[in-house]
Length: 557
Image (cartoon, rainbow, N blue to C red; front, side, top):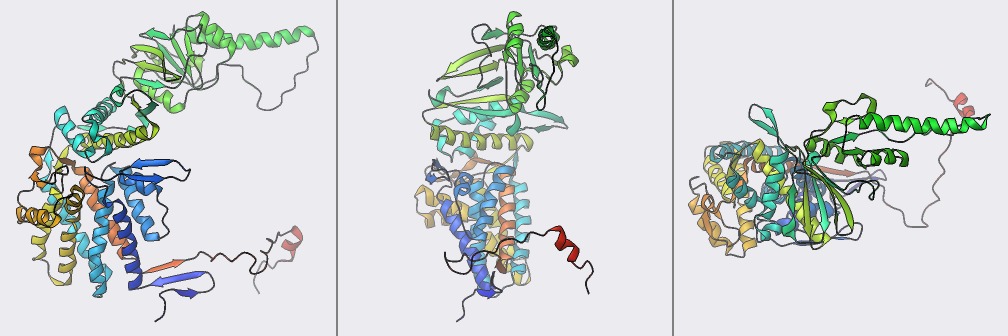
């Protein structure tokens, strides 16, 4: 019996045929098994040691897989799945891995029976089309403006997360934040940019209940001259700059030759006048608060504080953009081109507060903020990090609903309905594709089965009862209550999923399974590391000189 590894030419290693399929399937199943226990509300937490030696405690599928360092290429591509899912819809990162792992698991027996992978993939793709059709059929449109429905939905989506024990808190924060920054695109479409306009500020200390969404923004800065400048301004006029309020320095060394002693004072005077001029151009608009991304010299600070203006310097560009969105200001690049319309008047209050041992500036009570900050308080850094991850998921779910206001049942009900419908359809499929198609139908049951396992109920009884209820594709809303393991109606329990998330989960899982099944060769071009001291010393790279270039033949013989 030869080993499946054929060594070609010193550095190429090749595995091929059925053995590769088995290896890929095993690797994918291993990844799925790692995070299988984190699916559902009664899920386990994982404690991870990250690369820098810190610890992460989480049950977010994507956060766990990000920290794994796996050698097998198939396992790596499984990890990519959860990242894709997280970036695209922000939820369902665990489901997608479990489903893809199961799809590959059921394909294994067909590989053993010498089915061609293309046939299996064709059947899977057909199953995917039919599954999305079933989703469309059972989806329920909702009104994204109805807060109670939105709250129920976001709660059911983060009910599987660690923070579900804090009740509605995270769901409320997420809905407040996403409704604040939503922008109407017309034709009933809304765009929500979570990354740019929602900043999550984690401040250790206090209680989690103190967390809130600010109607405006906060950032970790104090005014430039704390004694002289006001730290609290009601209805401030805000000017945002992207230019330095200090004398321009030379790019590199600049030499100035001065012949008379008076020239030195003239030079200093010019610098002072330049800065005074800049400040006067700004003060013309009677601002209360000047914020710049660049530096602000002592002299400029003096002129501003004399006029009773508070100033903040060296602010991050992203923070500046958020302030502009919150108070309606425009970021100005050159003070001499400023107009009245560039001044932000939408803010209700500017205040600098001390939280813990750091100063934070708040620009809050804005009239129509299109950016906001979520202030998270909590006992420890680890707790705050986990709350932030959960909040990101919750905001993504809220964003999905605002974009596409349709719901499907949670608790494994959708998967069971899809599974039952596909089983029915499989009888009408002709030829060899019928069996893989039916296997795909059975694979969808992995989600409700895993939910039942994680609740600690009798899996076989629960699954049999559920399959009986869903037998002909009816009772679409019957599923598992993840907390008790009881079989209930998802509509009454308000356990819902966003349509976007489910559709994306199915598409990603099946397409990934097809991709991994199509791999029949793994060729690695990595050289084996030599044992220390073995072989000759590495040859020095040869450096060509001009003389060599002359001697080379340009044209071949």
